Image (tube, rainbow, N blue to C red; front, side, top):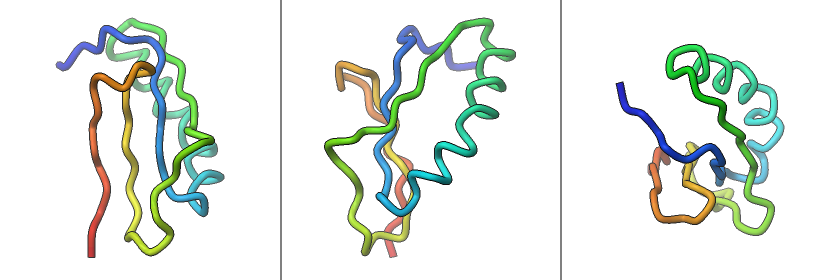
Amino acid sequence: MFRLMEDKLVVTCRQSDVSLIEKLSPAAIDAYQQQSGRQVCLQIDQKTSLSESSAGGLIVSTANGKIKCDNTVEM
């Protein structure tokens, strides 16, 4: 299993998906914490968002931006 050393993550998504991310993130955080034994904090990026014309998805990055996982969908 991949072990993340960072405890603060930033999620970038479409503005229209913010409420969905807020709704689903507690379960994702709980699953991660149970599998890894590590605490993690998720923050939604308030300065940048994905284009509303994109098909969706999200980008998860470390708080310092050095590591990014791009899980977006392009049409």
